Image 1 (cartoon, rainbow, N blue to C red):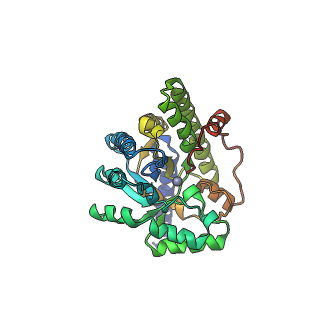
Image 2: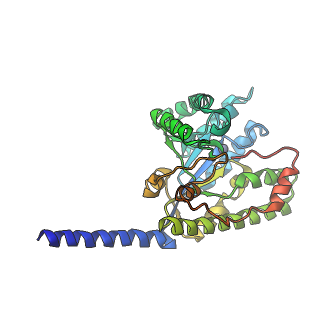
Image 3: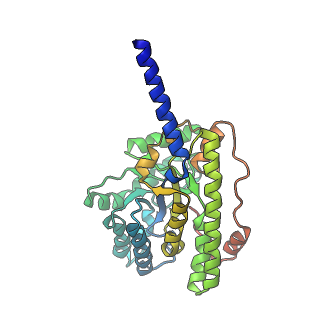
Length: 323
Ligand SMILES: [Zn+2]
């Protein structure tokens, strides 16, 4: 009898594992959490408060209409512009009024790899003030942190100390698995938009969507090759005019790949996010790269970013804000 029960449990286990794997591999069951960094606006120092409000209204309108759960990550330093503080906080508060969530992205977008642990910890504490107050008014708690530049530490000791600090303050680190460098497009796009160069805007949009497709294709395959299935993915975007104007087209592209949109909490409950992660490095990168490198298989042949966009970006009077 015991043997029979054990065997039937084993069969049930195998059936459920197979079901999970099939579900994960079936393109129509892909799942993705969308996150948006550098709030209230990636380019906040060059935008007026009224432009930030206009951009935020457009971006959030589409996201709410399409029922996409979002966590937005804040750099509170961007709120402090004389004469505009109230309106900049108002733009931030809109995210919560629209039903989205906010997380901490450090006060001034400080990299753990550049400023060192102590200063980075101060950046986190300082970056909580307004966000925590606004969340409290919406009966929410501050619970997510996103590393600027995805810099998670140059050595394992620093990385683990940083993680312990975050846990102690009640944070969960927001992972990223999909990143098509919208920030690199956004500077060029916003410049074209100000000059009403609609031809260039469309060219950039076409390239952005096409590169996004390549990045997703590459990391979907790498996921399967590496861990045997496609985990619930996490996409990194930024608060800029490219997304405000065109996130609808991006969502349509992703739905076309079989994605449905889930919360960050749901995505990160995928067991993949509990896998060993020993990544350290000067350059931040996404979690699929972390896992691959941890397993001794550094990823190769990732799709190349379009050089003409890099060149256009370098030619801008001012450099774009990096994630
Ligand atoms: Zn950022």
